[in-house]
Image 1 (spheres, one colour):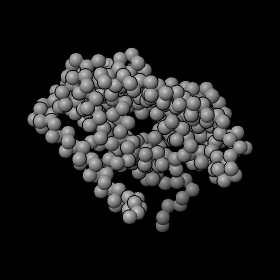
Image 2: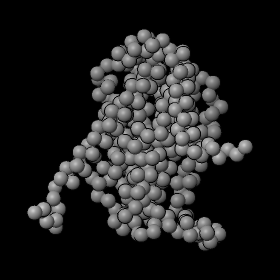
Image 3: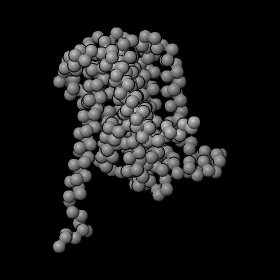
Image 4: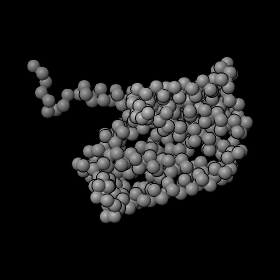
Length: 321
């Protein structure tokens, strides 16, 4: 029997919902709901404010990194920074509230296509390369934390993570060679590669990689502060390993924006350092709530901004009547 039925949208949607529901069913089977509610109420107001500020810092690093990539690629018509902020916020809203965590990236690619020459895939390339820098920084952050302070039972993962980080750096450096590849690959592939912009400046790429570490570090510290508000004895280096790995689950396609899977990874990894399941689950849900709140606010801001611009009559448009 063919497995083509798995490609049907309705089937994927059902499987996604089932996976998310199954993950939460497991979590609530190991956590007492009353203890979870008590842990959630323990989060201080200062911790909530700090969480929102750190999530906003992560977003700011992401916007600046994306802006730098347009300079690195020499886009003929780079978007204004304020316009790029709106596009990034729009993508953040879609990534947060739609399954897969990548639908917002598609939207961002479409919105910025006009920054490059017609026929170029520059808008999508800028988003893809921004993601590459982010993943590279995530691997580097986790590998560095595990070298300094490995989680119990995970010491064997240190070198594979470092190798993955090195591969990520090689991929980033390999972006500079895309233009040369068109001479040695088959013609069909060469035509596709020719649509990709070639980086013209290394400095913006290097600075973008540095900002990527900031965009990954901020949520990790955010998760650490929230957990520390609930359950005090937690090492920061443990959080620098656990939080990035758990938040990366948002990109897995078999759950609704990583929900359930993200919390399961969070709980299971923190259990290795003695954190009770209810405290870890409360911290994970609080971190998601802070990110979702910020995404909803920026989504509302973008929506209201578009409505306001649509209400202003264009100078070259004649009034009715």
